[in-house]
Image (tube, rainbow, N blue to C red):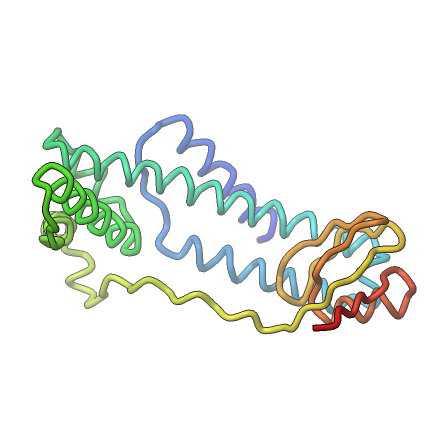
Length: 221
């Protein structure tokens, strides 16, 4: 499954670059990728010495590959959605078949971008404050009229997710020797070298300090 998922993601990205157009993707693609990355993280933390083992390094590498590929898929599709929004705002021909391939969150972004451009254009050209007219939302709804799959299933366009708070306190440390790449409890990958002064999650900082790899720098307020 692991190799299949990564290969699927890479092939999808290759097809996107080749076609240059918004293409259909499985609605659960991002969910599958997130679930797989979470499994890899669990496997990493289940190792006895993940920082010192070859298995830990391979897991970090695979987490990075999946994460980077999904991010690139998101970036490519976002640029394509923005292109469609500009076509709509300029009154150019918009391929509705291509527009129907947006995911619900992408459709919401599409409508918001159109509203933002319309509001900015009215404010600058007419020289007055102009509230968003909601035309972008209407344009997104017109796409739904062409493809009523969401309406039939009762799905709603999701609201933008609120930023997630940092769940772990951080510590400022001085790295005293080179360290292989490792994943912190905050989900980020760290590649550190001797002499680095960095902020790390306290749990990870404590482990490095216990092994005399890092020195905790306690700053007085």
